[in-house]
Length: 69
Image (cartoon, rainbow, N blue to C red; front, top):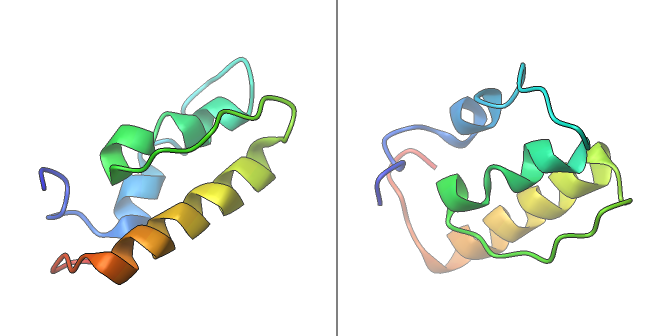
């Protein structure tokens, strides 16, 4: 896994200063970095999108073990 050398918090930090038209897109832009698939729910807002992303990451990590996660 290409990004496993970076811990989760570091990967989240990559979008901190990212400018997007919609807040959700900050979270959505991390899908590939975390190797997760989620529905795009425009209108849910940035906070909810990040919560759903974190839940998806947690579910993924239950089945996989990466050294820095």
